[in-house]
Image 1 (cartoon, each protein chain N blue to C red):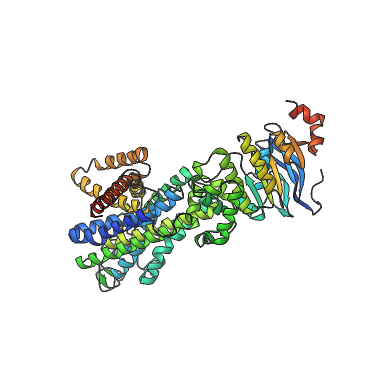
Image 2 (cartoon, rainbow over the protein chains, first blue to last red; image 1 turned 135 degrees about the vertical axis):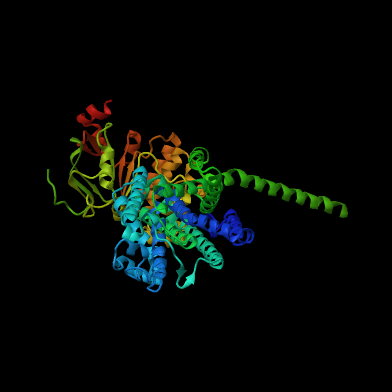
Length: 378
Length: 251
């Protein structure tokens, strides 16, 4: 009776199909591999955006530190790739062969204990999901159980992003420092630098993206999704309906962290390195802007936001490198002031009704035409 | 004042309850007892601490000292959601419903099942839930509004919806903070009728200013003044108490 029980409603299904056609067919067929690889890079931010839609759009929890989880996922993947690239044969000239080059430069003589698990590919895949989830769980439990929320939470997440960046830069011997982890070559023995590999990675990423879209949509449609909305408006009422608000916030924050980490791991694979410049405050805020521009209440909007803003960033910063940051800031202010639901809001409020009306009038016209045609025949 | 051992048949036993905000005692050494199936109305002038008492019982405010025992369970140590699960429901003074959700969804969220994170992920909207929601919606006069978003409801309808959300929780103790405030005359009559129907098989604690309404529903009345009990008893008794007339009814 109430709401349709289908997984996607009509306009969501159209959005899903349009995105699938674009990402699976139009872009791979029309772009050269360099540009397609750029799209793949933009799409890694779409994962973060999907997480932010759940956490911020639905749950009302604004995190300005999603770069932390993007980075954790990316670093987990980079550590595995780096260890594979640092085989004893490849690092013969180092004073300690078999450890990553930057460790050797920093006078480390053995592999630190927390690097060791990343020799194993399955463990790495698990770590990509678990490390950010556990980290988010700890932050979430510490904050939400104490009822820290809103602006305070946003500021704390931002501080964590700054701290993690400083930590990574400072602990050069263990993390690769400001340069990050570079010179990555193979994934489980498979060279990721060839054009062919880039095509395959692109399609793997798009498939993962659609997997995440479906996962987010599933969460949105359960009662948990409705509790997130309820919590955003009337936290006390949720509490006095018998729910532990803190636990639901922790869940939303952890889910967003895992989505971001998958994006980060794909970023490492697509771009071939990971560095602290994707962890800190600026990238974290940019991720929020992509989501806001796309529409923080729309899962598809987040994907479009990541694609379009990054496309604009690339093309504009090539021609106006000085102006781009101001442009991005202005865009964010404009969206917040004029279109709080972003592109998807504009679509739903202005474009969709027009299309519906057009279709409706065409339908009634053709129906009228049929009657008119039918009449003389009688 | 005697604190501690109380006869078992009280549903709610508040004893020696005190809360102070920066030295100001909003509730001062308050003790009262509510029996099973009793309707108790708390009245008193503004600032007497009526809402604070409800806040203390439902866990929104932490007591400085004293105890609140509900069916023998100490509530002052529980979190808000645990108090709800113990069987205490609370309606706020201003209607607090989820405006971005439909009436159906509002009621469904209050249905006492799947209250953990995992439980709400696997929650199924089955026939039991549907029937119960429809049943309650009929009681609160919103049966034909199930698909309406709550922000489209009138003030009175929102109040009813919140009462419905409590009903679906099926609490043993229902606490209502000024349920008819801001309602039209006809809405008021309907609410009284609604309350009279839902108070069966449970105890109710009501804060209300509308004396006519109080007279209609109260079994016993507690008059609060400056965080303490001024008078307690039947409406008849309280109405004729000279202290009550002086500080409250006389005005």
